[in-house]
Image 1 (tube, rainbow, N blue to C red):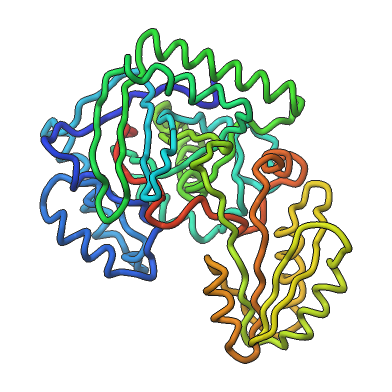
Image 2 (image 1 turned 180 degrees about the vertical axis):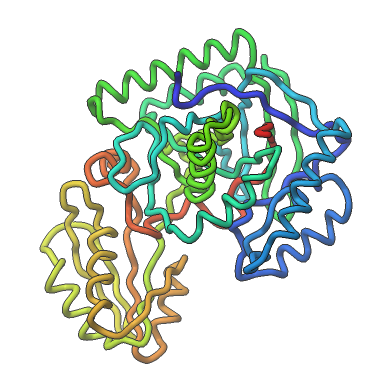
Length: 405
């Protein structure tokens, strides 16, 4: 079975999609006012908002909210809200606010071929360390669900850019299923149906891509890497393993709906996530860091302490990116010395925060796309907060669905 394959995909039969699609549940967690505006806009109209639980709303006891989600899923199905497109892919183009167009294909991954453990040898792997306590709340939501809605983005390493582009070249021949503006500054999204002969041809393209990857990296190759939504896919895997252990039929649960994107797409921006270490002796930490990792050649790591700033070089080691070396050192250092770490987007924010006394700001380099998959193969999952796939408003919106119960 292909690790990534076609699916039975549901789309709502509604006159306008403006209120249907909402952004991934793990965005704007510290900005509840964003979700308040979304609730006000959506109201009682059909929406994926009623089918997900934003993380800003997570509480110790979410049983009532989860029960409401499950009941709404059943009601939407019983009312005939959805149209099912059987055994298909959807080709998706997302026009971002900067005008770039990010290409993707919606299909499903086989959870039998996915493992999120750090030293996984599966063909579908996590990119970043999975935080154990972030998985159970997602499993609680999925256990009683009759639908799944994807915000997971899975990456392929198609340097020749043949795979998704094979659909780009023929999109004028494909049925256009949706074309609308996403709410709250999310840009525009369009989706085309890929079924029948076109589905078979794209499946052949998938096989060709997988063959190329195996030839390049050997039998231990990772074919697909989870770029965003690691914990949601881990929850799907956890629920599937539970059902297997209980001996219950679980064919639908074996798969999870995702969007496949190419890491080498020019619109796919990998932004570095910088570090702020607070309540520390910043100069002592910087000296220790430079002594441990500083090299004459390598990639530049910038630092800020108050009004002072500078940089030093860190060389990657086999299977370990420079950001991983820095993170490993910070973790070990703070086990002995005082201080706490925050993860920051934007160099200006780091510079401003580093003006606070007893604070060290570190400007980390962007991940090299060309060595990304090779780093996962050689060294396992990347350190937490290694990279971000764009800003919050560029994350995937819930739109398509699939029956799982």
